[in-house]
Structure formats: C-alpha cells, structure tokens
Length: 254
Image (cartoon, rainbow, N blue to C red; front, side):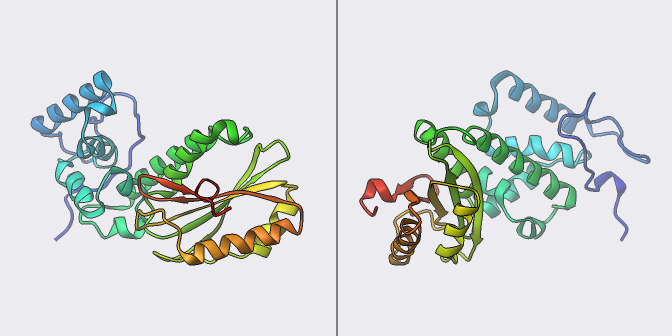
C-alpha cells in the first residue's frame, strides 16, 4: 500500500523560521490540534526551564519534531529509549542500528548524527590548543562525550607539545565490544611526524566498567617502551566507562 505523504520522514532545519506546523511540501495535511498543542507546550517548557526540566523522551521528541513534522513522535521517542537505554546512547547509536528501529528513516538518522557531531565539536573546542593539566576536567568531559556510550571499543591518542598543550586528537583504531587493535610503532611514528613531546592514550570499555584488563596493561607497557626510545613521554592512559574513568597514572600502572 502506498505511503501517506502526511506520514513521511521529512528533513527540516533544526531551528526553522516560523512554526514547524507550516507546510514544507505539497500536498500536506494540517497538523492535528492535539499534536500541535502538545508541541507548543513542550517547546514552551524547554524555553522556560531548559533541558533539566524535561525527561529524556521529551527531549527526544523535540528533536524528532524537526525530522517528522506531521505525526505524533512520542511513541517513537519511547521506542528509541527502550531500544538503546538512554538519551546519550540514542544519539551515539550507529546509523545501521538506528535504521532497524521501526519508524526511523534517513532524515531522523541524519539529524541525530548532526546532534552527535555538534556535541563532539563543542566538547573538543574546550580542550584543543590548551594546556591539558589545567583543563583536565574538560578533557575528561570530552572523552566521556565522545566515547562513553559507544557499543564497540575505540582507541584515541591525544598528542601534546613541550608545554603539554593538546595539538592533535586522533582516532587510532576501532574494534569489537571487548577488543581494539593497537600498534605502538604507528603511535610513535605519528608522534614524530607532528613533533609531539608527550601523549595520552584513551579508550573506552563498552561494558561500562573502566577496570583495565591484562591486555590493556600489557599494551600500555609496549606503547610506553616504544615512546621512551624516542624520548617521548606517555603521560597517562585513560579508560572511559559509562559513568566513570580510570587513570593508569593515578592507579599506579604508570
């Protein structure tokens, strides 16, 4: 049976001029009054009280209003949360996993990925070209924003200059739910290429537990050895869990 154009997934700007109930294409149907009133109430609550005044499913609704302007999106918001667990995991979910959720089309996926990229960009801006030691809390916030809610392991290297200013943040590798390949020689080679004097290793544990495995400890020792031969300092290795992190330096592993 052909799709009703009033229920199609239509991409809109995140903050378009005028009311989102205005027609975006022809033919289109007028938004039912109960949905229109609900959207107005949510938008008013958000503007008056901010995100803290809204549960996750309502914040998701606000995002989905822009992607799906012609139907009630509350069931879809709840479906996303039931599938992925919380707001952060919805935003950071892989595109192919999002596409498996009933009611999700390319426009919704695109808009969610824009939100994710924006959050990463804003968090990264707080630490780039700044001394790491005096921006440590911002660095941890960035690592959690980018990595804490991923379903697979990711390994990043933060390269520092002689003043411990962050000059590069690069993804070294992606892996599975419990393993990511790391190549110490490639890390050392890249450090020489950009004239880094020190670095910090960062990877996440999708299980949520930041405790290091034996392979994490052994890999860190290999990287530290490769760097030491070049007079490059390994400041730390951070393991990012869902709500906490572990510092190899603080825990005595370095």
